[in-house]
Length: 188
Image (cartoon, rainbow, N blue to C red):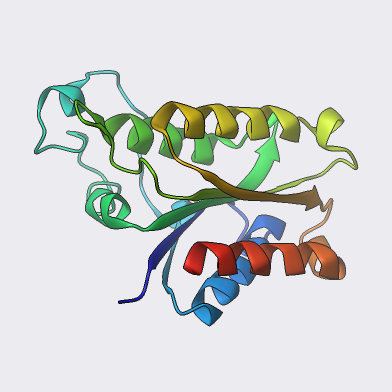
C-alpha cells in the first residue's frame, strides 16, 4: 500500500516560488511511490480558529467551523506524512499558513495525543530577502520545530530559499533538488 503524502500550499500566488517547491516535492514523493494530494489554501474558504475548544471536548468532531477545511480534516488525519509549503511574510509564516496551523493542529490534538504524532512533517519556504535571518524565515523554522516537538512528530526536513520575483526559485537547481529529495523521503 502506498503512503499518503499531503502537501499544503499556502501561497496566494498561483505560480509562486513556494508553489514551485511544492510541485518538486510532490514529484519526488510520487517517484518514491506515494499517493500525493496538494491542498491549495488560496482556493479555499477558511475561517480562523475562534477558540471555542469544541474540538477538544468531543472525539468525533475535528472542528465545528463549517468551511472548506471541514472536508480536509479526515484526510489530514489519515495522512502518512504532511508537508507545509508557503512564503514568509512579515518575519514568519504567511497568514494562510498560520490559520491552517491554528485550525488543524489544535483540532487534531485530543486526549490521546495528536493525530499526526509520529508522522514525518516537512516545511518548504521562500522569502523575498537574501538571508533567512533578516527575512524572518528563522522564526517560522523555529515555530515549526516547536510545533513538531509539541505534537511528537519527527521533522523530515526543511527546504527554504530566497526568491524575490515569481519564478526565481526555478533558477536555483540545488534548491529544487532539495525539495524533490524531501518529497522522496516523505514518500518512502
